[in-house]
Length: 176
Length: 266
Image (cartoon, rainbow over all chains, first blue to last red; front, side, top):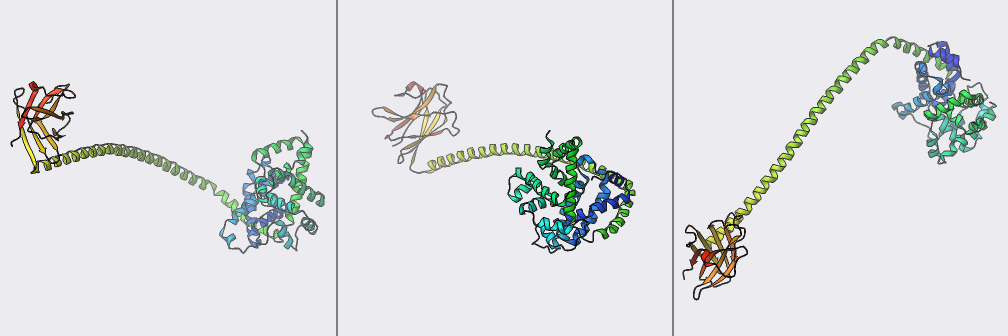
């Protein structure tokens, strides 16, 4: 659901609204950032930057531009990508075997989310490899259709429908 | 519009990802205003993605809020300082404008200077070409004069002065004959410029009996500054004469127009 009332309060610098927004989206923001950075310490740092930005830039958000969730996603991806160009990122010893969000999920044992994380993890692991890759690039990394097609070497026209099939499967499992 | 087909095209997923272009985004937004089932689908996609990404969260996320909250106050504090920032921004803008105006003027001056210099370069090049031409001409003249000087200094060369005749008592010429090389040099600096349509013709003469043989005509008389012409002479000449003849020369000399004549001392 688009939290319209909360968004308006946030735009008026209401800290309670900000707290609610944080509770709603911080896990998602962290998930996105960590998929890109693959480093917990840096991800926590960037998470803070992202929410400061959300607080400061909230008045610029308008529903015409897209979903509030999408707006937050973009801030998170951009902040994480910016971080990959920093010295502190280049100094981290990155786990080179981690390729997509699925690999990160693989290593995960303690879940914070209220939802059935273990169930989701199992289901995600059983997704077809192409689904894992398409979702990783389009959703987590913010690739365009064209970039995704090039990266995975599949026809541009099939990216959209393939992704649709993958998300549909997830929807059914999650009983959304 | 078939909204089911639209939904199953997969465009709404991309809309939630944020991977559509601005134009496509606007189109989807319009559709969402019209079709509630499209909005429902967007909500479902969003919820799926929220669940998917929250699985990835770190246990520390909740405790981080306090850190952020303290920074919020700092950044609100910063907001009150904005007026000062603005005025300094204006100064920066003024300085920026002044700098760009100064830069423009500078560029204009440089452009003008550059144009003047380029013109100067062109003029200088023309002058240089002229001077080079002059030098070439001078060098050519010099080498001609040098070779003439060598001729005059050569002891084997016979010098024959040709004296004026009745036609023009002031006329004078000289012949320098290199017998070995069979060349005669005719110096006609003392002859008047021939009238249009006429040329001087040089003759080698045998005296007994008088038999003239043409050595050639002196074409381009007025154009030659040195007024020294070289003509081949294979004859056993005893005298040389120069007559004025119609252009192209004649087969035998027109004696009424004999300008100069000289006999070789034997």
